[in-house]
Amino acid sequence: MRYFLAIIGGGPAGYTAAEKASKAGKDVILFEQNALGGTCLNVGCIPTKSLLYGAKQYYNATHAQKYGVAAENVTFDFAAMQKRKTIVVRKLVAGIKARLNNDHCTVVNGFAKILSPSESEANGLCSFSEQSERSYCVECNGLLYEAQYIMICTGSTNFVPPIPGIKDNPAVWDSTDALAATELPKSVIIVGGGVIGMEFATLYHELGVPVTVIEAMPSILPNLDPEVVQILLDKYRKAGINILTSTKVESIDGNTVKLSTSELLSTFNSQLSTLSAERILVSVGRRANLQGLEALNGLELERGAVKVDGFCRTNLPNVYACGDVTGKIMLAHVASHQAEVAVSKMLNDQMVNDQMVNYLAIPSVVYTNPEIASVGLTENQAADMGFTTEIRKLPMTFSGRFMAENEGETGLCKLILDAEKQTVLGVHCIGNPCSEFIAAASFAVRKGYTVAEMQQVVFPHPTVSEILHEVLH
Ligand code: NAD
Image (cartoon, rainbow, N blue to C red; front, side):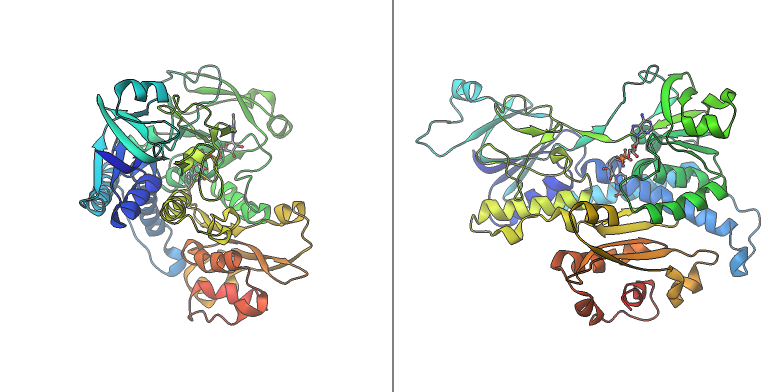
């Protein structure tokens, strides 16, 4: 059978594309070597959020005195938290299966490999002649499949940096190992103070595990607004999380890391240039998965990822790529949005540039406590792009609801405006639950709303979202 679309990878990009194209009546085949749902559902967003929620319940129960509540003998059961996480994941994966259960969608479990034109011609199934309509040929589990379009949604895997002693070291974990563990480590060193590093730092700290974070850059979360990050840094350091910035891991020996850092040497004596913990969690970024694509001769890459345009088209005809494999912004909601745009383009070539993926209007959230949520340009990025900016900012305490529910916290909401046009270029918040209202700011950034237009939006009272209204005055 010849399919309209063959999708390689069943994460948020792949399953969104499969659902959209098959519901439009196109015959789709989706290949997934592991479980449907990809990294996000199985070993990323959902399991971490499930565990973080459990940790937050425990932390809140043991820190409730400030709200007039005293709870004694509060305990937690990490194995039970893990069990609940597994059930949440299982239910969501079943939901994806149900969404793909239609007459136009076939799901194949196995590793898929795209065949070269010569391999395809040899088996006589797929045609690459100039005259005929183009086809690609995919092999999986020893069977061959032909498709008019290919969508590469193969995702990414944890990057293992070339640090001596890291490979085959049982003390070293990546985020997948940490999520699978049935017991908490007694202590942990986290290498990389990015999004994964800071979310695991939050999880372990809230469950009482001593945490050290080692970050090579001068600040943790180096891509976010520095003022917002500083608030988190101050709070976490005060709470006892040991955060070492401008610090590099030179080598690992068993469960001891050797560090080199000007900051460390100026703060402590040189004996402190080694640190030990039961586990060393390495979270220094992810890399695109390119296995199975080798035969796509001439596929253009950019910084180790598949290069795509605003409609997620690669340089090869009828070949699209979506999600982490494109190396754009490695977030599940970027992957699913890219897939929606890509399938729309496949089905309707008349789409205009305004309908391309706008990477400047992608919201992102870091699930620390307090949460950080942002969208659009930071002050520095806006300046680099030549904007003259106007900054408006307020502590979150200007929201009555925030005051009622966030004792001892100040938070921040910061707006980056184009000073000349008065349009919203970026919004950066820290304070719970800013993850829940950053989408409102995304509208403003995506649509290029002016301050006056945003002021027409009514926010319900009392909600923390009102800070977006307050900060405009
Ligand atoms: P990241 O790029 O966010 O952070 C990696 C950090 O490691 C950076 O701060 C970097 O400076 C630091 N680093 C690199 N090499 C180092 C070294 N040798 N020693 C010390 N520090 C070093 O990557 P991540 O945290 O691994 O996350 C991977 C991807 O997953 C990101 O794109 C992230 O956005 C995504 N993710 C998103 C969420 C979310 O949306 N809430 C959650 C988890 C992961």
